[in-house]
Amino acid sequence: NSPEIGSRTRTRAIMEKYGIRTKKSFGQNFLTDLNVLKNIVEAADITANDNVIEIGPGIGALTEQLAQAAGEVLALEIDQDLIPVLKEVLSPYDDVKVINQDVLQANLPELIKKEFKDPSRPIKVVANLPYYITSPILMNLLASPVEWATICVMMQKEVAQRLTAKPGTKQYGALTLAIEYQMQAKIAFDVSRKVFVPAPNVDSAIVVLTPRTNPLPVQPFDKQKLFGFIRGCFAHRRKSLWNNLQSVIGKDPAAKEKMTAVLNQLDISPQIRPEKLTLEQFIELANALHQQNL
Ligand code: SAM
Image (cartoon, rainbow, N blue to C red; front, side, top):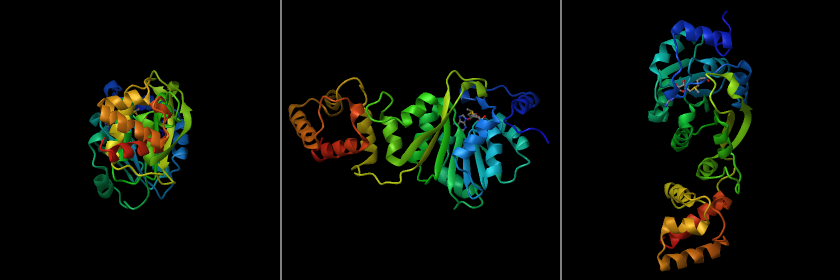
């Protein structure tokens, strides 16, 4: 009848017993607050009918909470030293599988098919993400063909603010738009740095992503090119859209004339900053420039 893994006492005991020293290189900051852990599971809306993929289980604090709520849990941990620890501390739970896997190298559809007993149930991602690769992990999840029912993840507060930013704000940018393209993002709650071992030097927030309920108002001619274009438009955030377009497309007079016509037609001022444009406007702009062979 030991206390739950996410309690300070149990975490300390596990780390001592297995001689665990957290690795900075893997972004290891273990969460030691049962309230926060339970609130994450609640924000993710996990039920016994859900399959959960956890990225980076650490020593299993969140995994244990997920195991109690979900149908099945599949946890992917890159640090092989933690695998025997996880196997032992999670042994009381059926329907939890831990594998030694770098999530950035994972073939997620294949893992889902292979590792879940019933792969047809909704798949939810829940994680306290390693901060150093938050964006690549999110981009990977969104690029995969899996239809995530929910992605509920903890990240650095500043990144959470970028994911949920509104046009015209400093935080709004290519990452915001890449998320908005597929998902609705909302910050569930903030988390103090004090509840981690070791404490990171930033505060965190839980972001919940759910699939868009309303379809995109305009379809891009090519999704990858759209995002290449958007990144180009944000390359010099403090310059005007016009200046950025010139770096993306070129300064040739004929091209400039076409760009002016396109902006006119879309009623977009060349002097505005890129961060003022909505996703819909970026798609319309990319499509119209493409039509002009630019
Ligand atoms: N879930 C635990 C908790 O909440 O206490 C640990 C969270 S810790 C912030 C991040 C975890 O992700 C670590 O266990 C780390 O080893 C793991 N990790 C880092 N990079 C990873 C990767 N590329 N693939 C899978 N796991 C990774």
